[in-house]
Image (cartoon, rainbow, N blue to C red; front, side, top):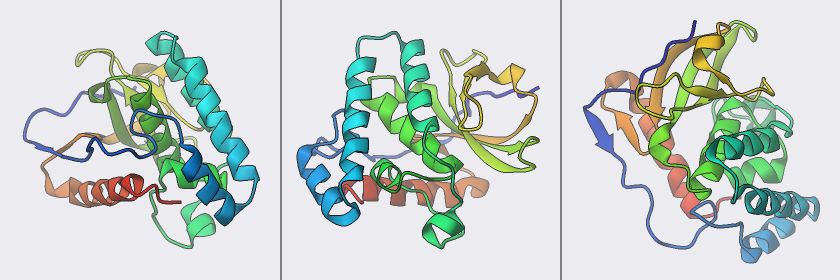
Amino acid sequence: MLKLKMPILNLIVLLLFSPSAFAFNGQNIPESVMKKAERKYGGFVVSRYLAYNTMLRNAEPLSERSKLKLVNDFFNALPFLSDIENWKLDDYWATPLEFLARNKGDSEDYVIAKYFALKTLNVDPKRLYFTYVNSKRLKAPHMVLSYFESPQSDPLILDNISADIDTASNRSDLVPIYNFNADTIENSSAQQSTHKKWEELNQRVKRNKL
């Protein structure tokens, strides 16, 4: 049984987001970014970005649970590819723009993209936790996005290897390692590398890195 609790205090507040206009900050992917991506990746990337914007429009009037489902389904349709094959790096956290542009990524990339999409859809980011697990099914480390309806609730798990969004207690195939929230990271030595990766990722998101 996967039992997860929100990390308790001793949190570093990450001042990650400014009111500047960049993609994945409460808005659609702008046309200027699409044109830049088209020059770099070709025309197919624009169709994926437009599909993303359409998904956001369709999700906007829905309930929070329905938003989770739509976002999960949208990104789970993208193919999986390891960082070594995709980026020639052992561990690279792609921005959502990069993930959609390359049309492939690993478990962290699905989680990152889902987080930013849900935040754009006004889902409270304090409810969204990045969760490192060991996957019995994959027999490997893995990352999923956990959604806490309340601090005490059994979280819902958004997972790229599962079409269904289920509660953590029903995911006996996942063995939790630790959670971190995207806006606050627990101040512990075990998570310093995570803190650094998250800060670096956000700088690339702010630059609309493609």
